[in-house]
Length: 589
Image 1 (cartoon, rainbow, N blue to C red):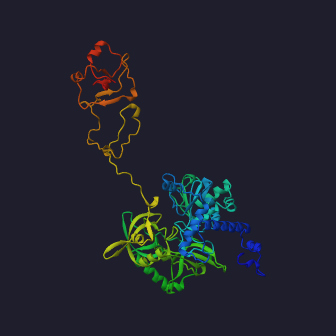
Image 2: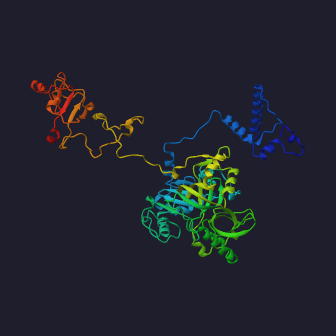
Image 3: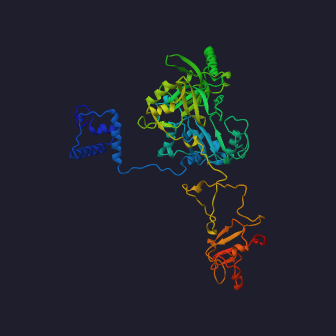
């Protein structure tokens, strides 16, 4: 602007005034300008000249920006640290909750944690009003809703790429802003008042509660154990919540489905084609269409996250109809009207709807389970060239054209927190074709490992006949023996499991064999290094005649030890350093 003379135009803003109005530091801009001039001169010495009139292609701008940023930080580059058993530790720290949408806060009074629920919700109300909070001792696990990115309130924030909701990122940011982090506190309640509130919520004192019980406001059947030692799950009060959708049986590896909504190339919603689900859906829509004019508008006083209702949806042809829905979030519009984020429970899509357009859900429609089931493509992730950690527009558009409003078979990889990780299988030419693989072949996706919660680490393969070894010497008997995997003995099996004992005599009363080592003191007969002696069991019975065959220049001594006189030495002209174990050794002990 300075070079083009804009600050010299009569009636225009002065340079300092423009910088102040634009919230920029003029001195910093001037320093950057000098740096650019210096770099330009240096590049000229390398015969690199900037073409002032050359326009950089848009596809190259991102790469150039990355290179500039990388060069600016040289040599201060970093990489993340990943401790051992990282995924398992993440799940343990979050007590099994979904790590992609859960944060944890601690420091809550353990014995009366549940009574601080409203205070905790107020702390995070700017992030989301639709929270599920689980309490375990002094910790609260806060789970954020996973909203469809197409309906995110742009007035508040933009959607952040990745598997975690933007609301979770905002909650984590609260800790990093001093003004907000200082206000992350709760007001303690006196013991007497805390006890009274516990009785109002649970129906009894705070020292009684059932470990498996899920506590919600209005719960009429409390149970008994200590809150500090067990988990309590608290949800917002709801208006007759609908029953969860029916998931496939754990024994089912495949499931026939009908795709109702595509969020992205790796995230979509389905209805089971098995049973009478599609028939139930059509029947409910007929009931709604026949009597929609008679439905009562939903009172604004009862509209809250979690309440169920009928909400309008307008299709691409401009036709509007009402469907079963659940309120996910509330926020005021620019004109002051109350807006709601609605989730259509039988289709999986979300929309922003004016609160005045919501209708009371008839009782008979509350008795039917929600039908939409959330699915994610397994073992694939977005290709780096296509997007920044999220599925690109072209990939999502392809899956919408390929799968939306069509029937498929899904091969189930896992079911975690009600979400199916699947391979989406269509048919072409009478053969099953995987949509996961098609995304990879088209360059939209690459193969990826599933997260810890989607996998079960198998132990083995193992066999009870696989031999484990121990050192023969006393000094090494307590140490683990590891056989190299390249050794033939690495898979050595016990070929005689019916004989659990080592070589014993016929009576089976004790071992027969010898103690082999470095020998004994010639004067005292005591073993020199007992920790390195090896107890060797004989394969066959050893008799006196066998002992006489040992070379005469070696010596064998009875295991009892002690010095031997000349008569005893002449009776045992055996191998040096071998101590004989008598046949009746254990009997005498």
